Length: 255
Image 1 (spheres, rainbow, N blue to C red):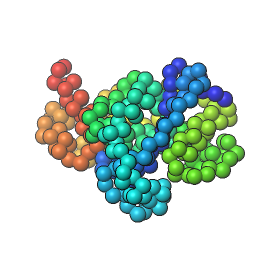
Image 2: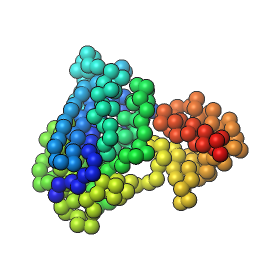
Image 3: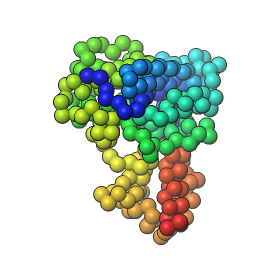
Image 4: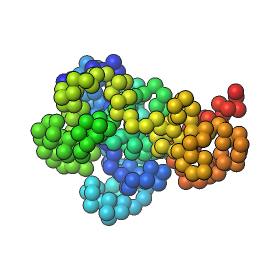
């Protein structure tokens, strides 16, 4: 089943130096852009992460320090990546929990704003786990009856993710072929800051998900203990989390 699109959707996948959103960097990014008329555009970049790729990570994705040594940095590639993503929804495999948060960090570090306010994100892994609970390779075999060659290659994983989503729509008639509905279905929790430090409670209010103020509204904490804001800004939280926290503080100040 082909996707019903009202605007483009970019399926993307990252290979990185590790799994820590605030510290690790992208070493490869592949984007497959699908337009409402069915046209496709695909790009892939190797990226110099400006830090060492650990041996245990190289063993997973096969990208070595020597391979990326002379490649552009993410800051140099950011204008091209932003242009390709502009005006598009996002799709990926475990993208809501990892790829989008890490991409947001890289864009902010490069001096480019990253905002999801008018963008929906479809996490194919979340749909798969809710329906079948397996991995990408198993998903590809299960839905598409194909073996996933070159697993952990960003380009191969991106194409497989796109094909799996189309096959999911064929298999599950209860899934509506609408990117906003699929985004809602594939969202596991209402996280405001991607990394999950600031969530949305049942009343739609931002709350902290960690520490001594877990479950408490952010606005209440900032009013009760103003120093908590400064502590978070200076601590090792993701840049996007700090951006969201600052936005909440400004909203409270203006109101």
